[in-house]
Amino acid sequence: MSTRARILEVAARLVAESPDGEISTRAVCEAAQVGAPALYRHFGDKEGLLSAVVDHGFDAYLATKRERGDTTDPVEDLRNGWDSHVDFALRNPNLYRLMNSPAMRTPPGSAIEAHRILTRDLERAAAQGKLRVAPELAAQMIMSATTGVALMLVSRPVTFPDVGMSARVRDAVHAAVFTADVSPGVPVETAVPSAAATLGALLRRSHGSGLSTAESALMTEWLDRVSNAER
Image (tube, rainbow, N blue to C red; front, side, top):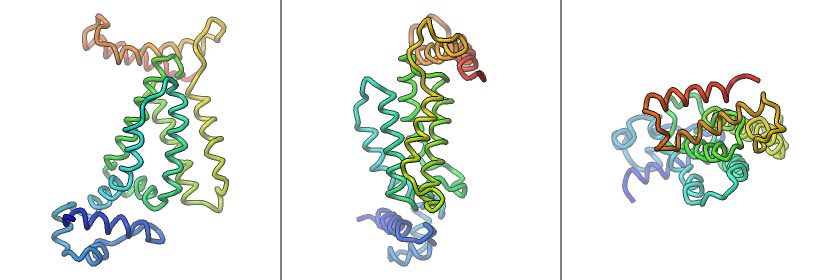
């Protein structure tokens, strides 16, 4: 095992075992039997080490998302994604709190990848006419709600003892984000934004729209404004 891998493995274990998730670089160096210069050479500073610990711990969770095949129902994939996200947090509370700590000035690569996977599934939903808002806004709504629920469950278990709350919040958020297929009977205040979100998603995926790059960017901006307008 390389020195970097040993430091990372020890740091991940200390984070998991810590009562509050806090660790010191001194404790990591002592447990890994390395000097401080070796730790800083491989990770730069404590934040770099903790960011690597998050990516290391989150990698197994993301692997299941990378490897899964997309179903024909992106909404169901997104429901399952919410549940697996919260389940990961409950099984790895210290790691999850660390991942979402304000002290992490630079988001770990795993957090960025998770957001990208979420947005991709939402773009699939939008292309099928199932989104009320643009995929980017929907991703922000879902990610903030998922993270908030997960953090409350792992950080405030006395106040939030019911894990089933997650499903109720999930369904409420999804009701605000998703819509049934647009039909003539749908009120215009709902149909127009939904149609704009669908067209915007299709335009992003299209390489033969007949528009220039600048025209396509402008059209996408307009469609996002319509789909995200307050209703």
